[in-house]
Length: 144
Ligand code: RB5
Image 1 (cartoon, rainbow, N blue to C red):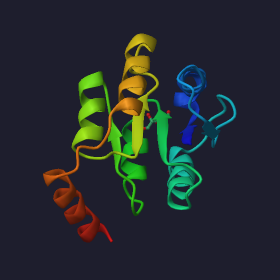
Image 2: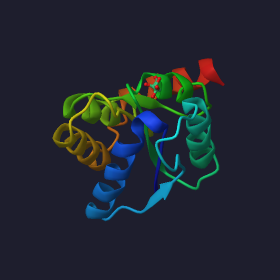
Image 3: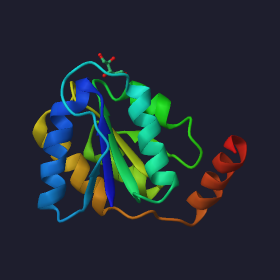
Image 4: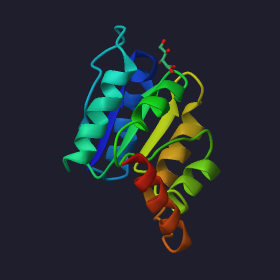
């Protein structure tokens, strides 16, 4: 299950991401927001963290205007490794080396073609493990 959440700045791209997830045959859990009315992105980062921590979702996609606020907020939560990606290369590396369980996108930054490629690559790329696991263990220890 892939959870998706956004604030108003990411709402339009979130709706598009849901259509891509359907195309990619991925189940999707929409955690809001519901429209383009102004909301606070930390509330949705927290919802995403809870969904992953309690096992309702395996991974998630968070979207705000730039992706920066969602990244800062999501990475405060235990067990969340949120990566802001602007291209397919960083999206791929966030899976291979960082085992990112949350992809963060900037709805006011990305064009639809680039965003779709980022989402597709991020979904299909596995974690490489090996030497990278030791580094993630160190992050886990300093944060929890
Ligand atoms: C909302 O206007 C905007 O600040 C938010 O979407 C995000 O870009 C914050 O980092």
